Image 1 (cartoon, rainbow, N blue to C red):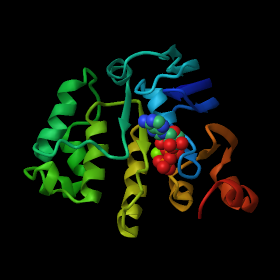
Image 2 (cartoon, rainbow, N blue to C red):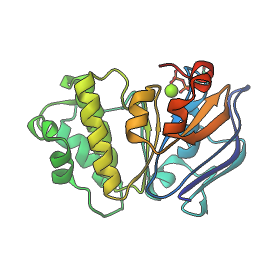
Image 3 (cartoon, rainbow, N blue to C red):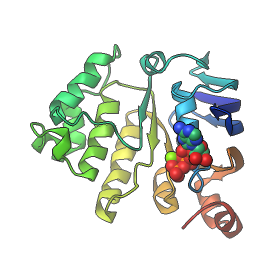
Length: 233
Ligand SMILES: Nc1ncnc2c1ncn2[C@@H]1O[C@H](COP(=O)(O)OP(=O)(O)OP(=O)(O)O)[C@@H](O)[C@H]1O
Ligand SMILES: [Mg+2]
């Protein structure tokens, strides 16, 4: 297992949000975190990253305990996080946004600026444009590109398909397949079951801060009761 969460409990102040989340991801897998608004998908990703450290339970990455480690250390060990609001630097250009990510990471590997531009040719055209002038879809690409610049072995993606036009989503499906083909493991939170079915092997369904169901994406896709109970189509 590249990632193993064992009975994690995460709080925001006194609000007990994650209640014993168990989850594991094998190397090379693409795994979905599914569930309706407010069930704890983002909190799960933040817990792994150390941005909202769990109060109880354990997070293991590549066989090492990372529970309670600060986010920069988790990042340096090979986990990249693409938040749903992306946090692109608005005053910096596309290229500068990528360059910063490279400088912050001590990790070497396949991914560099040119390979990111090959993956997202549109970003090459926009390399001199400032973050604030990119569209929502372009910012999503840059968010993923920036994560890749760190040469992570695991990427945590929050709501990658949200707000994207169907054609852009179709492109994202291919992009994620390419990234995975380079040996990067992916854990993504997304409400779009159709999209998840196209990119993920397995899924975990959350409700009220706990895993209610897990299984292969095809199995989840075919289970009308599970979909009605926990998901949105
Ligand atoms: N900073 C915060 N302080 C207090 N409560 C929060 C905070 N962030 C999230 N919550 C609450 O924690 C719960 C889980 O939120 P979370 O963002 O993890 O859900 P989610 O599954 O990602 O939802 P969405 O689909 O809307 O992104 C929700 O009830 C939310 O209101
Ligand atoms: Mg969320």
